[in-house]
Image (cartoon, rainbow, N blue to C red):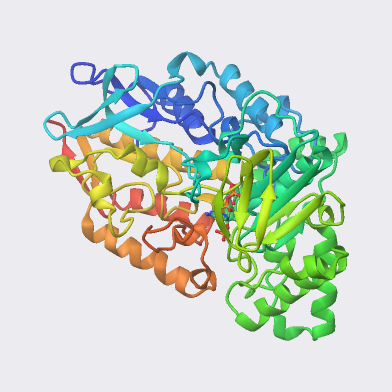
Length: 544
Ligand code: NA7
């Protein structure tokens, strides 16, 4: 392991030591770490006009972190950074996360090494120089020994292709590409397609202003009350004072400091279990999932019980029984992304919100002014597509790097998203992914996951440099073994039974495969073990 001191530069062969694509949480941290700790020559490219990644693009009304949030949805490595940033609410809104990332970039002087508004249009590996060459839409070519893809797990927008949708003449926005100028809903009839996190977060906000909102729902969702509230001075002070301990808890738990309660449902009567569900619902956030009973994502009967509990809550909240019935989810609780809302179900009690259940009344087509469903016409002035993303793999496939022998990633991943450790791909030496398929990704606190993965990548690079090695490449055997491991873990749970973007099931024709590592912090222990065992599963090539 490299322990400091200058690393051998390869200026003769490359323009940069490392190229990073993406300046969201992970890309920014990777830049800071590789440039300022390893003293590498690093360049970052980003299609956006500023730092922030997903938080730069997803500016729809109501956008907030949908996981355990302030002050833990943040970088953890610097006490100074913790001390000089003030989080204001428990469920951080998009604007605060973006402001925090801008602050981070400024504090560590990162922006000078980032090229914004630049698409990387091609990336090719050269076996002779053991380096990557990229091309951009600005007509540039650059090379680096290492290509670090911090391209975002939720970036490539999924746009429905209903007949005539392009003929719709009103304003049309995808939540993942929301305009930077304020969008006004006043006096407008707004149609929203999609009821994932983005739909459920934005619908209550849109309904406050619009003349009418028509929600087109394909799958009813389990959504839990976020119970967002102001974060007190006292809480912030305590978290700053205890940061070391909190960080240690985060490193060893699911990426957040909360202790997960591991109790067995059999030890409680149905009445006692119900009382637990009630108190966790009141507590809000994801506690009903992580703190009810340990087998909730494994045991069908237990999961049915929790599912029915949430359905009961929806029936209680939504006054019109017909609307409530349409809103009742019927898949296994928490096997799609759990959603945290601020008054979503309550919104259906407003006079200006109506719900179309696409399972009974599918969309047939669009005209310039309306959505035509099987049972009727819905005139709208604005269309909001809250239809999600080609998640986890979409951005890598978009980039479509060409590895050894010119093999493209689109060819490599035609049937299966083979990878090793969620961070590397056989046939693509010196390429690293952050939050790739097979990593904990969205099932872990993402800023911390990005930080830890970037640390591991940095250690790997330092190891190569310190040992006069030119390339690191996963073997096919290691990738197969990893694939089996990820799927064996998923097969023990209820996740694969549900059509979700975790399974690639939201994109027509996408290979069906569970895309996340389920063992949280254990994944990062595994990364360290691989490094400690001389990069088990990798071939390390001498520098040419
Ligand atoms: P999601 O969670 O993928 O939600 C997308 C929603 O759009 C979901 O309700 C989909 O229904 C629906 N959808 C997708 N395509 C269509 C079509 N063609 N017709 C009707 N409805 C459709 O994306 P979000 O942006 O909400 O959230 C993504 C993540 O970002 C989220 O999990 C957080 O981690 C942050 P489906 O359920 O597939 O039937």
